[in-house]
Image (cartoon, rainbow, N blue to C red; front, top):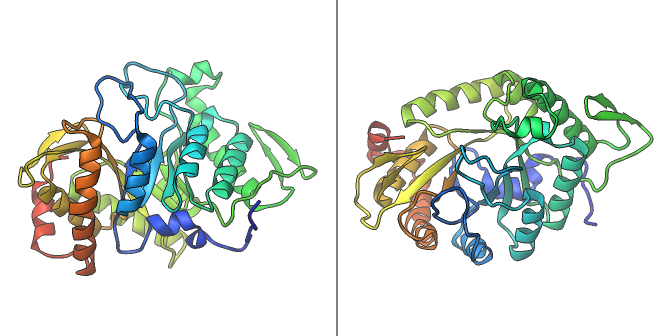
Length: 341
């Protein structure tokens, strides 16, 4: 077991450092790194694509928590249990952050979540970033014997249990999940403070998220609207923890066209466009305070391997150059006006 530094903050966690920098935007990618019809991906060649994403400079690989197949949702994510799959991918990569988007806390015992998260963090050298959520698939709650009307309360309780057992030895805790009386401890502990990001509101007011979470994962919106949401987040963080940097992240579905100059047309939670628009759009997001964008290639017309490569070689370096110029410029402003999400 690697040595734990109990005083190290999230800024010392390797996964957090790879993903998040104040005033900058990085890119991650959801598993499966694959375009597919229906709800079930093939999951072929994911290990090689994960290694290629790492080599190209993507900041993070993301897994989803989908316990049961619900045909009405149309997406099983990476199919495999997120903790098993994170262990598998950790063994095939070295430096890229490993993130959950997101673990459904009300459907899982918080001690199991904490142990799994700390285990992945230890085995990966501190690369885990733990995104958590309250759940949005109604069919799952009765299957697990959980009242969906209690998910917000359970989320908050379980979040606090996970935080406590990861950061303290032999805590005394009482929650809906059970009782810890100070005579038992959870091991291992993460290498540093484990970054915990809340997805959406998860039934919580924004000030609570700003105070207790290490960052916020939200949904794609038009850039003008996202600028307003990001500004509210920064204001809430300042009120809760003045001077702290707590990142703002979002997802985005992208169907990258062969023609790099193709203008955008909307798709579900994203757009189809060429890479030039994608670059301008990402520059606009960075300019309004988005720190990380999680790309999803499910609806792509091209093989995801090609898209991963083109963004890695044609967008990531240009985005780095753009951010060296403080993410400003006329191209970013144009993207704000033309964004179709």
